[in-house]
Length: 406
Image (cartoon, rainbow, N blue to C red):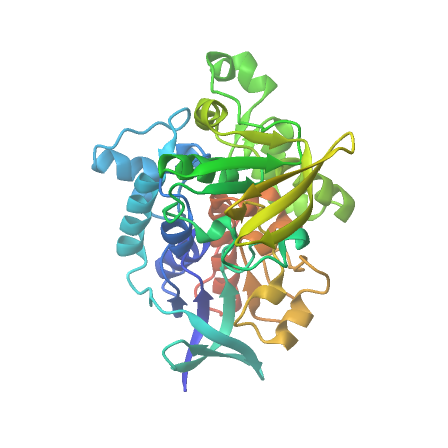
């Protein structure tokens, strides 16, 4: 059976970044997955990234691997801050990155992963079997879509998650309720509106939050001192989480949870406010108490803050309710591995080099958020995780001595 030093499972920003870092070090590895499939197949096609240009990079040691460099080569308008990056531009950049730095990507998914003594056994969807001395889970959010229990009894014909909708088609002339108040809900509701549907947004909060519009004050010296920019937002707390993930790792768990909660509150991009508020009806300050399918439609019973209930009807409900890193949902992971690496629901315990409780098994991206903070929920987290994991594997496998990643 073929044996490699490292197998990377996943070809999103974290997987491609780690592969580029390993390739630059001349490491023996294989990387599996459909490139950027979450972004290209499951994000609203009209989406604009909330992250600024300077934090929308994949990670490679090469100086010309950034989004800025790509846009300059292709004469695409770009600014580090204040100019939203379209999904189309990002996907073009990521595809160029993959071709240049990760040409060895094998566009096939992993069907199963299990421990085999001191090695790991992988079976690909093609039927090929191989073993790896180390495995890195760079699995993104594909398996982690969260739907509230109140919607669980509804069939797939009348209820789905926002993850399932890229084109917004199939709902022309239909009434669709989008549940949620973050970027997924806002972007998808606008796309449905453009496609001829009649969307409504339902959210527990009393208002939809939008990121602050960039202004001249924020770029002034006083503004930067007051609310410095970071890869995950403005302010000193955000800057700490973005620039000091190793210090975050050493905080007491209660403080880490509070910091994550404060940074993960849903919000739409500032550039979507006028579009949505002018065109999309909203039922805010309401919680869903009951959801029933009646004659092919859905009846949603909502309760407001005063306790009053009302019922609305629609043809389809879309849960834009985010993602939770429950490793039990990952279809290819052997249960015995899950039990060892994830002792509690939505918690994967990692060392400070992203290694799980199973020696040789690593995890980056959303599953690492509990340990390293909200930075891991965003693409910019790959710029910390990829070189750090690559350096740790470089040292572990006894190749050329390598300087420890910061």
